Length: 94
Image (cartoon, rainbow, N blue to C red; front, side, top):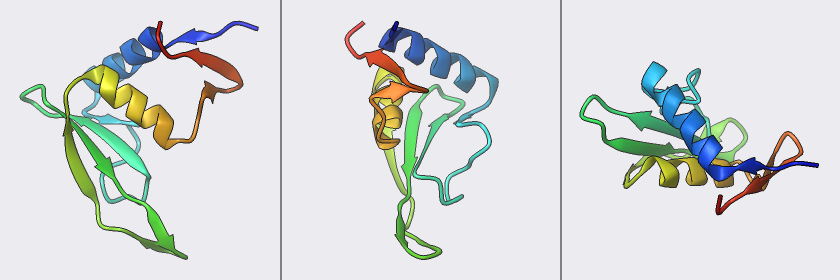
């Protein structure tokens, strides 16, 4: 079985953030989604994080500025608890 390079994932998320300012594009901060990435008009990258803290209850949104799209991609994948995507392993250092 093959593997996907982390650099390909970074490029895909970067491309997606050029199409719409949020990734995943269907979510916005405060929607109850664990983690949403945002690229603002000045090019800065932000991570909006929110967690379920009870049945139907979510924590406040915590927003953090990120240094790079690579950091953003890695945080997003790890927030989903994944070391693979659809059963395909990730080559983290490629």
